[in-house]
Amino acid sequence: MLHGSVRLQVVEKAGAAARSRSTSAMAELFVPLERLLAAGGDSRLTVSAASGLNEYGCQPTPCTDRLSFSSSTATSISERAYDRAQAAREDLMRSAIDIGIEAAFDERVEEMRDELRTHFGLPPALADVVFSPSGTDSQLQALFLARKLLGPELVTVVVAADQTGSGTVNTARGCHFSAATANGGQVQKGEPIAGLAQAVTSVALPLFDEAGEARCHTASDLKVFDTVERAVSGGGRVLLQVMDSSKFGWRAPSDACLDAITARWPADVQIVVDACQMRLGRGRLKRYLQRGFMVIITGSKFFTGPPFSGAVLVPGSFARRLDEASAVPPGFLEYSNCSDWPQNWSSLRSCFPVRTNFGQWLRWEAAIEEIGAYYRVPDSFRKIALTTFGEALERLIAASGSLVPLPWQDRPKDAADEELAQRTIFSFMIRRGGRVLPLSECRKLYRELAGHAGELDSTVQACLIGQPVALGCDPSPPAAVRISASARLVSEAWSPNADVAHRNLQRAIGDAGTAIAGLEALLADPLAIKPVEVSHGS
Image 1 (cartoon, rainbow, N blue to C red):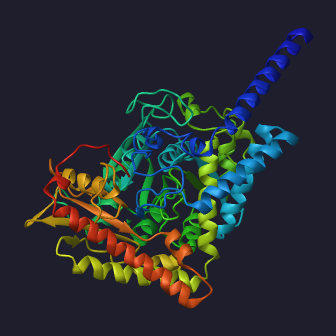
Image 2: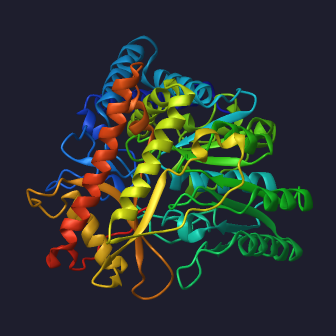
Image 3: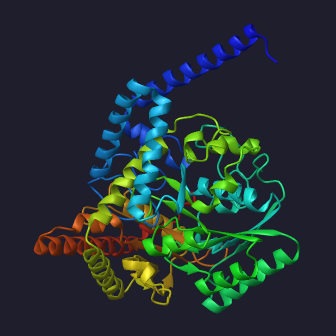
C-alpha cells in the first residue's frame, strides 16, 4: 500500500502528464485545417510537396479544377465537407475552454456515433461504433474483437482477397501493414504485431482465377464453405471476412452460403463484412448486424469523405462479452485510442491510451456531412439518379472502341439493397492496337489523366478515376480501371426543382463522357502509356 507522500507524488505526476497532453493537443488543434485533415493516418495520406496530392491523387482542400469519378478509390474533400470540418474544429475549441480538450474531444466523438447510427437507421441497441483512421486499421480492430469472442487461436479466411485493400494480406495475420502507425509509431511492415499475431493464420480466397476470370457463384461459395469446414475440422476457430462489395462492386459469398455457415458452426465462426466501399443499402447493413456479423465501413469511398476514415459496426448484443478489462496485446495499443471505443464499453476503453487523433476525427466529420447530405435526398431521386447515370455510362463505355467493359455480377433482387441494388462501379479494360493494356501501362494512363505528370494537353480535362486493378496472377497482368457513381454525385445533382435536377444530372453524365474522351485522347499519344512503377492502392 502506498504511503501518503508517495501516493501524492503519483497523483501529481499523473496530473502533470494530463496537463502536458492537453497543452500539446490544444496547440495541434490550431495548425492549418488542411494539415490536420492529412494527419493521424499512415503514409498513404502524405501529401507531396511538389504536387500537393497524396498517392491517390487527392488533396486535403476542395478541388474544383479536376473532374472526379474515383469514389472506388478516394476523393478530395468537398467544399461542404471542408466547411463542416472547419466549424467542428471551432466548436471543439469552445468546448475545450469549458471542460478541457480531452473531455470535449471524447464527448464529440461519442456524438458522432449517434449521428452515424441515425443516418443509417440503426438503433443504439443494435450497433456499437468503433472508429479508426482507415478501413485497414479497422481490420485489425475486427481481428482483436474476434480473438476476444472466439479465443486467440484463429484462422482468418479472407474472401475476395484480390479485391480488398492491399494491406489485408498483413492485417489478416495480425501484422503491421505500413512502416508507421496512425499514432506515429515506427514499425516494420509485414512483421507481427506483438500479442495480436500470435496463433493467427490466414487463408486468402481470390475472386478471380489465375487467368483473370471471375469465379461463378457456385464455385466461389463451395470454395468458401470447404475452407471453413477444413479449418473447423482441424480444431480451429474462424474469422471469416466476406466482401460487400469489392473493387469492382461484387459481393461474395452469397447470402445462402453465409446462412449455411452460420447454421453449421454458430460457435466456431465469426463473420466480419468488408463493406468499406459502402455500396449497400441501409436495410442490408441492418440485416448483417441482426445476424451477429461485424461490419467494416468507411466514409471515404461511396460517400466521398476525405481519405481515410474507418469504423467497425459491432452488434450491440456483443457489448457485454467484449467490455472486459482484459489484457490488450501490447502492439495493438499503438493502433487504437481510448476515444475510438464506445463510452458504454468503459472497462475495455480504459485499457487504451488517451490520445486525440484530430485528423481521424475531422475526416469523419467531413464524411458524416456527406452521408447526411446523401440521405436528405428523397429516396426516389437517389434511385433515379444512380439508375440514369449508370445507364448513360454503360452506353458511353459501349460506344468507345477502346474500352472493354467487365461483366456486372448478377444478384437476386433484394429490397434490403435499396437504391444501391443499382450498379455504381463501372469497370473496364483498355484496348489499344488490338491488345489489352497491362497493369503497368494502365497505371501510367491513370496518372496522366489525373494530371500527376504535369500539364495535360489543352484538349484533355484532368480527371481522377478509380485506380487500376490487376486481373489474374501473370507477371504482367491485364488490368481494369473504374468510373464510379458516388453519394456526392447524387446530393449535388438533387434539387426540388425537377428541371434543375435533370440538368445537374445531365452535366454529371457529360463529365463522365469527358473523362472517357480524355482516356481516348491519351491513348492516341504513345508517350502517355509508357509504363511507370507506382505504389499499390485500394
